[in-house]
Length: 117
Image (cartoon, rainbow, N blue to C red; front, top):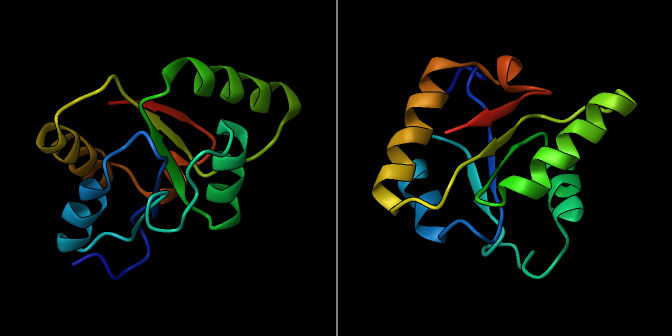
């Protein structure tokens, strides 16, 4: 299991089905969903702020907004723990792509980068 701290912790924004969090936790990953902590209806920036406060990489289907936010962070030299974006995918496919990413890259490698699934 993933106990050595190398693996990124994830925060799934409200666009991502809450079952994705459960599927990843069963496999040993530290994942929190916006649905579980009542972070629904807040702005994309607030979602990212929460992820940063918890040292988590954010996962979203909201490609356009997070590409823009990531570019702003680069310009302003602001830090985040990674933004992972994707087109909308079925739950199983999204889980598989996230597992592939999490098993390939460390938390440090995800940090301050924008990742496409």
